[in-house]
Length: 617
Image: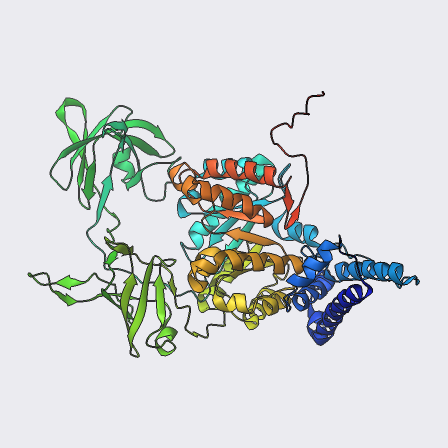
């Protein structure tokens, strides 16, 4: 049996003393920075520095030695580093005094309670009943006209609504806000509204529009039989659908006035096939009609309403949106990314099938053409398409596609472009961000700063909010680039100059920037560092994605959602089964909070098979 020696205890004491000294030294070094942080974050900023000092070292051997003595192994010290180290030092000094028959030199200390719970509430609002983690929903454009869904989401457990300024416009955003505030009144529950500034995000430009055609399809079962008709909303421009529908077609008020329930509307689609709409319901300034066969309608299609005595009333369809055909890119093909803002087009081929022109598309930030280099990687659409830059000119990048689906991957407008190895030096708010802020501050509880890469960008947003008399609005940093992860401590210390504040782990772009293999490791480090800073963190991107989109989850994403409980808020994207996803996530979070808080295991009774007592002889 091993015995504890005086020498081993002194060795451990020395290591712990050194860690305490380094923590104090780093706090003193960053004293001017700590002096700038908001009073609510004074102790939090010091604790963050103590944690960074601790994690400068590989202390795995020390952890093992402390654990064998029955002491804290420092593995859960994130929120109270100095107190943990002093407590361990006191215990070691007690051991030493016992071995040497001397009086122990223990130091009284006050453990500073974590301010994280109050910081979470200040930023993300009160939690739902019986659940500590918040649930955030990303709003899509159709939710601006779907009040029943917004209300039902709030009833189901939505705590926060995220509106992305990279999509839609102020008219749509304002409708979203109106729906949320209306639902708050009906449900009697607060919903925090967050606006994402687009930030210096590199995206694909527009594509050449195709014909103005819309396809409408009934629902088909596994045997190819029609299980439900397609539901179409016929209404004048600006009249929203009363609920979920398959398509909207705009018609005149005068023609609509002649429709009646049960009425038949006939037309010939683009394939010259005769089709019929049946009027199912008149409501809300429009008509819900059913279609039991697939149809394709083009601009100028005549809708014919049968009237009495064999007469009919025609309505010519106008203002149909053009079809946008995506670029189909395969491994080995070339793509031209160009500065000029002209619509992109797919590759062109001659009669023999030989390519005579490469596919091309523009990008949103012209700065890239002077800051990227030949040989650097480039990725599109959250890494779905990968390439390498083969040639750089002032106006074009020639890209060779190195990874795509075997049958070809689709590249659409407004899709993200990542250049993980390129120094793009995009450290400032964009002009669009500034324009959007003027609207956002009238409605937002929190502003999310996208693609932040430099502390100066955080200070710029803080100052801009101050200029707009909106210094009370919270700020959330989206950590989604390699530069942001690398500079995370300085970003957090800068962020803490204002209150309230938090961060979002934007796992989509982050995985692309750092590589999929590193994502699990990186998100763990971000969780630890933000806990040390006592800042709330949002776990985002593709949580329960299959469930939301298809109605059934994968086993892997259920585990991912359970792991997400260590964050303070979990974000879901919108999909056909979003209400089901909220219910499932709510249940998972309630269960997991009984077992774990952050890295700390909570030892409630286990739900395992009963252990039968052995029979007495």
